[in-house]
Amino acid sequence: MDIVTLHPVLKAFLAGSFSGTFSTILFQPLDLVKTRLQNPNPTILNGGRHGIGMLSVFTNVVQQERIVGLWKGMTPSLTRCVPGVGLYFCSLDWLKSTLFPGTTPSSIQLIGLGVFARCLSGVPLIPITVVKTRFESGVYGYNGIASALREIYRTEGVRGMTCGLVPTLFRDAPFSGLYFMFYTQLKHFVPQDCFNSQYSAPVHFTCGVTAGVLASVVTQPADVLKTKMQLYPSKFNGIWSVVVYVHGKYGLQGYFKGMVPRMLRRTLMAAMAWTVYEQITKSAGLK
Image 1 (cartoon, one colour):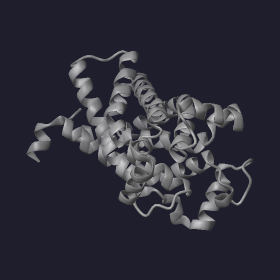
Image 2 (cartoon, rainbow, N blue to C red):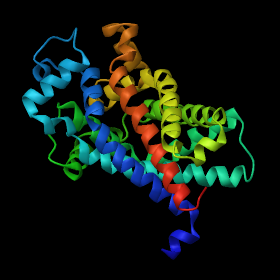
Image 3 (spheres, helix red, strand yellow):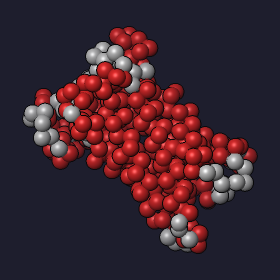
């Protein structure tokens, strides 16, 4: 316990990892449904490529793979999110305390902190993100994370391990930056007495939900592009070819496929992660 006491960054990492574990397990079904909406497969969905909705995907997964099928890809999700969320929170805590000791960052600075922290935590875990997306899609039949990574490296090389990195950063970095800015600014509108009362957790959660909705809409197109690139790396030469493909096949609405389940998942997951993180760091003496 002494090392945790001596290192606030480690406290932030542990608090972030704990909050990431809980929220990832709870909201994994929404991520799976989102991935399959973005990659409509008639073989899996028993239907055409048009008119497929969130409820029909959910129903088909339960019918064909039982209720546990909604948590397909849980292992790579946890492998990615638990250390990823922990790294994000400790990076954010370290950056904020180092660059802005005793001061409140401006809106632009808050966005910058969120973007940089997400890049630091997201880039090292991109191979796990690729595996997670493929597990959820139902298109690939990998037996596990290790075997999937070996197979991807053997058949696709480093390019396959890092495919979708650019749109992933275009999705996650702005989302984290905008979310952190919206979340911090929204808390300023709430009387500080609320954060020291029994309503502290609900207030944090409400601020998190509102911030998540705003940030999700802006970054949805990048999520669609990321999914396509990670599922079919040999089909696209770069991000522009994916942009042209999605627009040609689905039109403008194609960039917002899977927005409802993603918005629900990212919003609720981020809100819950921040709520749990705030409560843990407060109890641990970081705040």
